[in-house]
Image (cartoon, rainbow, N blue to C red; front, top):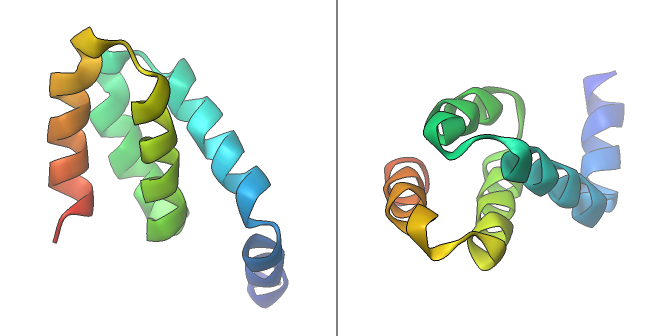
Length: 77
């Protein structure tokens, strides 16, 4: 079953990233770090990174300090 789900993820990557980005957009900024950490346990690293980048594209400027901290903490190794 996992291999089937992985094939679906690989070939259907853009819609998956879009739905992850939508979930992050709906998350209040004060809970974003917790949501990203939780999602990383369930989703692939690349999909979550792309979803956060999508959020960075449309987020208000006042959210940028929090977004920068979350991105640096989870996606820069």
